[in-house]
Image (cartoon, rainbow over all chains, first blue to last red):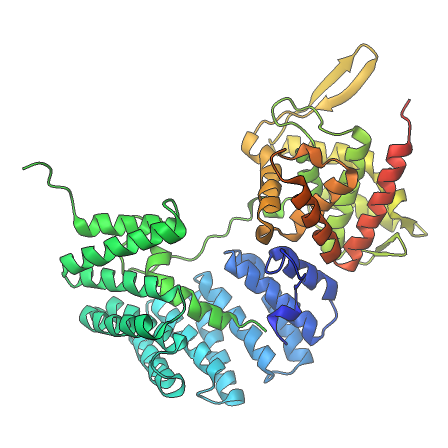
Length: 262
Length: 255
């Protein structure tokens, strides 16, 4: 079962909310794997559009259906269970998200194995959520475990490994270990540049590195990197994009107040 | 099956520092972002209200289509809303009640479901559009007035009363459904089911001229064809019924 099974119209509407909603409505109440895929796809599309509150009841329904129809250890049941937990995390509901993520991780480990790619995905999601929830010590520990496991299972240049290293760097930086974060990001950036990672990864790594350099008091390299990141954002996303505006704001902040004419 | 855990891995953590601090200004680079805000806005608005607002000029309040066609569109939109919500289904061109439980505080949905539920036999889409259209015009118009989106201005001509005007009180909210639909027609990937249904209805009514004339009509027509092909069976059958109703409206000579 793939996402493409649900919501494909074979035209310009592929990937639209229209396609996902239509597929869900067409299979609603069927209690089959394809109806579950349609429900999951719709929920994911809503999450991608920041409409997470609308996605949550769909994911609740998907989890109930999947458990009943497919069984609790089925890979698709584990997917929708993870998605529900992530949706809670996206809303900042840590008290709901963390137990759900831990339970989902345990279920994936039991059903698929501790180093299965889907288990590592769930562990990474848990690490990120721990960081966002402010539990930095556990976040760093969990991130380190994911990085070690992905290094071993996928290799150092795999996009998932680079992604988890970026996550570890952010957690280390937030925990006050900025120099460690700089080292991790430097290394990940070099690997990403030479081996080719997902296109969105490079700019994010550069931005995070620049902010970490600034936090470490290394103003000049931070400014140089932020200037390059701003140019890249303006070219890719446009002048008025919120992320471009954020980079511009950070550049101004790191640069400090203009002293004016001497 | 798309795994949102992977979605979170791929997007959120990487963008976390930059993305979640966006727009806050005062936040430092390594601080945590708050939860994503949800703004239901127009997404929660009933389809019939969208059709009603699109059908009226925001400034003059004049209807942009004939009253009969508008009533047909309002009925089609409200029936579609109830199909999407799982209250109605269609079979052999007839409307069938699947869930009679009236949504709380939704008097318009309640009115339609009660009307359908009281019938001993099922009736065609065309019968229901003819029966519900005028009442829905009144109910939807009143709701929009009550919500402070438009005001109602009665109009009297030499030969008697003409269609009332509904100029905007809140211009942004009144124009929003049309602007959003025009955006979706230009950017098909942003189209949602509600937008697709409204677009298909406007084209079925032959009233797409109410939309921005700079929209490429050939491309838009193709997109609406794709929408019709991609609609779930229940909505597809409903739309076919609306097309039949429109033919009847077009053939009727008003005296």
